[in-house]
Amino acid sequence: MTDRFDVAGKVVCVTGASSGIGRALADAFATEGAKVVGVARRENALAAWRDAAPGDAAYLAADLGDPAAMEGIAAEISKPFGAPDVLITAAGLNPRQHADEQTLEAWEATLNINLSAPFFLAKALVPAMKAKGWGRIINFASLQTGRAFPNGIAYGSTKGGVGQLTRAMAEAWSKDGITANAIGPGFFPTELTAAVFGDAERAARNAAQTCIGRNGTMEDLVGPALFLASDASAYVTGQVLYVDGGFTAK
Image (cartoon, rainbow, N blue to C red):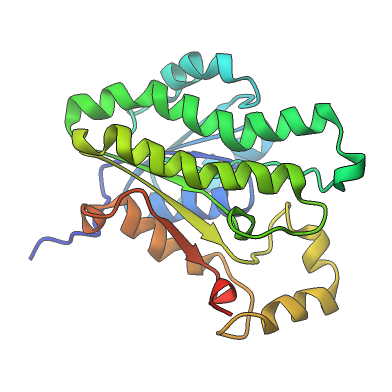
């Protein structure tokens, strides 16, 4: 029987691969036999990831904060293994500024990384997916895609946008064999959530708000990502899959 979850041999690009969720997924896909290209700003961290990767891996150190650079970045991403079959946009920025103190600089930087980069990078990679008649785009939404959190006006606005971006991508490209979906993680220990997990009481309070009764581990994201990146999800597009232990169900 064919394994519809198989991603072996697929070329997978993961942004934000130098740490956190991006690195965990880059490792997971390499373990499953995919050829993974990790993209992030920090070359030393990317090189360390590549050297320790459990399979075929390459990296590109690039600044995703400039939407005008995406065509060139896409061309570089495609050099090691060919054009990606799967794009996972896990890079993110959260300035955690209250609305009263929100700066234009931080607002624009957050918009560029969280919303503009996923679209313009996907736009640059989609022609090759269209030529194959197959592609997968996995964006990263957030609990803030549908809820307002303190000090989250810039981050939440972009993540609300990611939800609609994902639906619009699906409308534009699904007829060409390219599905577009998003994962909305609950609370996972990453650089972006260090302030949350650094406060044991707050972390415990978040865990208690889930149906399962705990915060997430990186392993909890692997199965959903493999599903959305494989043939198993061929009729799933334009969706935000919350991987949050039931946080949004309560």
